[in-house]
Length: 226
Ligand code: FPP
Image 1 (tube, rainbow, N blue to C red):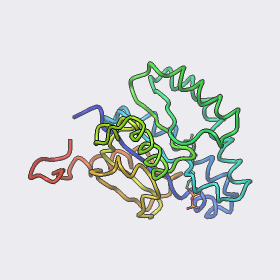
Image 2: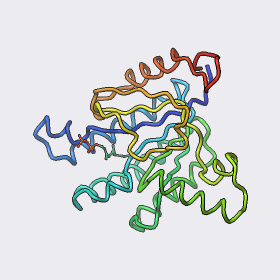
Image 3: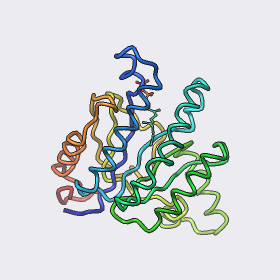
Image 4: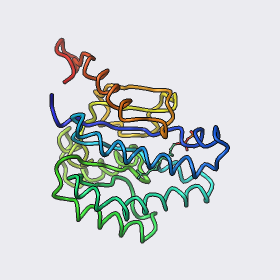
């Protein structure tokens, strides 16, 4: 079993989870953060080396300002409370996405978390915030134009991200929603009806089991996913 499985999660269903309980949507997002914590704890035990979670897409700015504020605060609180814990667990925290539209305090918290955990190797937790894969590709194309090198390797380098082995999306939706389009070229997809706050480590384990039983051919004729 490889210990470098790269899993991406499109966390969906926080709002529906809250609505089902007659709670404000913010309660759903708080519950969603609890699930992130559990996944970070369990992912390394399941052979995951990198976990990319889609926390806030660039299109999420269209949500009501109160909800946007809640999500931004939750991210900052997560960093302030969890960085220490991540350090102890050997979890490296990284962010992808634009930073210029985030509050200064949040950017400071991101930079601190990235710097403090940069030596950690048990798991890379990559949090996508104000992230749009199309924008990332445009930026990468611009960097490539600057260097004059136009090939797959240069694109990979300019994007700064790795290919995803497995993408999981919760809450019954079956879309990519501008998430790591280049990096998903040969990903396996697992969709579940579970709402993100209800998603358990056993669900992650089951998704990885499904992945491992898939045959990955990369266009060729070979082998099982590993
Ligand atoms: C989608 O559910 C979820 C989001 C847009 C936000 C996900 C963010 C978190 C779980 C918090 C992230 C925090 C950390 C620490 C990474 P939705 O609100 O669109 O649900 P709905 O489709 O049921 O309305």
